[in-house]
Image (cartoon, rainbow, N blue to C red; front, side, top):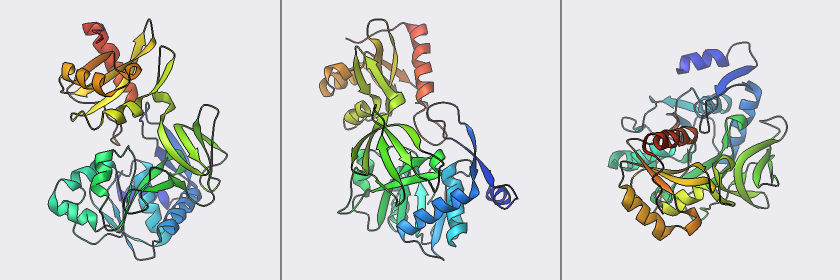
Length: 331
């Protein structure tokens, strides 16, 4: 979708706008969301960040998803000056204007850091929010000394973009998300985050995110869908990935496969890697019960259009690999 098409939809008589979920756990789903709730979300974000009329907002994300749409709505609602670049992995390659506010996915930030001129432009953004995927330790470390505010966002299509932020740089950097005013969080008995955000979502929203709570602050452990039940032990795929981060350089993810004895087994999927070397690292670094039983080497990891691991697709690839090659368990 281009900006002209979205503006036409925004300005028509319908009280709602069509959006699609990201598809990180399956097929993207269409949703109709209320324009007045999108405006409420825009005001909350701009107020929290202290954005004022006339500030420059950079749109560098696709308008097919809520993140891109909300950048436009924030500009319209709060009278920001919207600058647009074609969505790409290097949004700052040809963009040299000063920016007060930008939203990017981790891959765009990572790519921008690799080019000196782009890195300097990134450093000059007054408020940079990063969402749509996990921010690993090395990326966070690269942002630590940025002179202006860099934030990780927590949210989803259903909450019309983010409902909580955590600071990634400066003396107040933290692993804990703080919800905006008017938003309350709690937990299910399983440990999943529950959001009560009346301004942007009707009723409470039970997420699939496993969290730790500290009052109203929360820390994300991983998704409930990504829990691997192996031999009676519950293993969070993201926590395993996090532990391997400093030790495996090729792109990788943790997924699962059926196991007659254990119920499910941990599987490491790695992009163009050495399976034996990867297994040696896993045995050295991971607790015994977290160690993968299999390693599947692929040419390219399955990813969604928004840059998140396509978990359902990864499981299918593992099942197909097993049919072709057998299980070849390690250990």
